[in-house]
Image 1 (tube, rainbow, N blue to C red):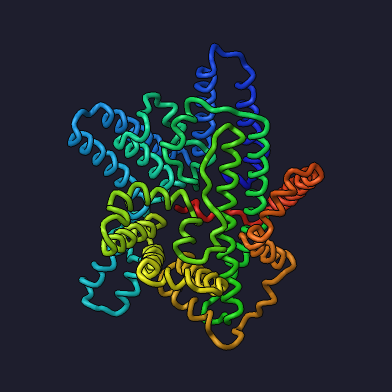
Image 2: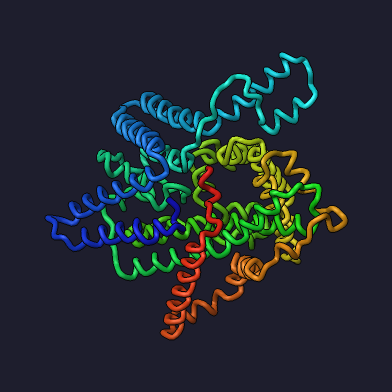
Length: 497
């Protein structure tokens, strides 16, 4: 069930909000009891939300919840450090085994089939192409495993719990329903933000709801919905049309339009989803950390990763980078740790060499910035060049990320610098709706906010401005509903991760 679907907006969400409101008005013996019933209600709604995509997926998530719940209790009860480590290691291995099976099994089988085909024919022609593109041969006759929606997100959340309990940075959770709500809570279940248990443990037991917090959440949700429906969906349609063409036939203009469109699509798609998740959380009394902070205005790749998918970066920093030693053990090991983290970041995103290459590309630039490039960027007086450097790397990265395989990515990147106009006209993709989406997408990705921040702070206290904001939200909501009612293109990119 998509946040940007009529079913969610007109049926599921009103039921959840109404039920949560009624539980706020029913008299209970204490606030703790009220929170307990609210948690059970929200858990039931969240499980229904996830089961809507397939009841089979729900049993997988319930298994993950049970394993990590028991693992947390066993870690807490283990007296010695060695015993705690064994329980932690066993729980983490179980989590990663589930993730590997559902996410990477198909990739491994395709690689094995390609190698087997080479051995049986004794020919190398086409071997590396088949190996890199993961086409497989079907020789083993094994059916492909279907990837459960959002499995990478909820497994990482579950692992953060057992690790936090092991490190004594969060209390053990003895109530299975509360723990299940932490893992399965529908606002952040499908595509994040990845909520670390230490950040939400207290909110599961006590939280305060208010009209002002609900209003903040409502505003955030409306803006996130508009980012998704009006900008990401529009530009996503353009990107898909361009990527569907035979790459050798497109000119540089269309290639750049496809790259820009996809770069804006993935930002507004993912950040819009995060905005909606954070907004929904506030409407129900929860406060989640920010997941994006205008990454496209960054002046270095280091800054980009401090602003992009912040919850994933924080997860890898807290549970991989720092335990490996972070930057405390010399430059050589710091570079090694960066390499490992971004290799894992690429692998986390999907079972394809494109994601691995994408992660390693960022590792190379981050290491270069750590060694020498960062000082050059910092001293550079013309910061526009820094922005161009970052956006160039990021867009090349998104081409790799979007492509079906490395060969296609390389061919597409080559088209960016191809002379001639190609067989297709760029004007056929530039409708007024697309031009408006590009305009608002570019301005709204941080460049406009960066230069109007002080003005906006002064206007927020103005009553007239408050009314204008309300009217603007209503207009955006109406436009979103009209677009959704028309049955326009409406996927979520990060559902596949």
